[in-house]
Image (tube, rainbow over all chains, first blue to last red):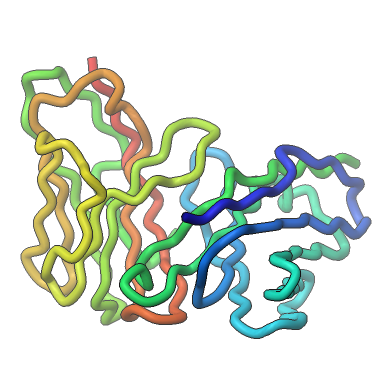
Length: 112
Length: 113
């Protein structure tokens, strides 16, 4: 099976940088996604890491270390609209390659 | 707005009603998914269609019946639902299996009376 851990809630200040960590246990996976979900809305794709290292996309960066079972999402220059839940998601491999295993999400509150 | 369109956005139905949820995408994606999401919980996979064929059914009760009429459309037929089935139902699609992100629709918020 797969298990994903991420903090339940975080608070950060507008304009600051925040890092949301995710640790996981799995027997195998293709890659790791990060999704953003505003309350009552659909999840939106942010990033996908297959190889170890950092992927940067504007204000958002995501990092993966397969050997450590660890990923993080880094948000820079925080804006009020970044207040949302951030989901760490494993992308299955082999027969399970269609399947996404979602973490429980980290609710980020950005304050002025 | 997303490229995956779901209708209706809200649905209230009694336990004896029959209704259908609809999902449409025109991105040429060949894999489509139904998820159920309860408040403050992550989405739970229900069904996966690949090339219009059902490839995964996550032990979903038979009162939920999926249908994929063509590569752009995905339906979820509902009959004799229970109050605990009230949730946000999300449709998603991806290009194919492999390292492709799933794109989600805005969901249908379903309430069972």
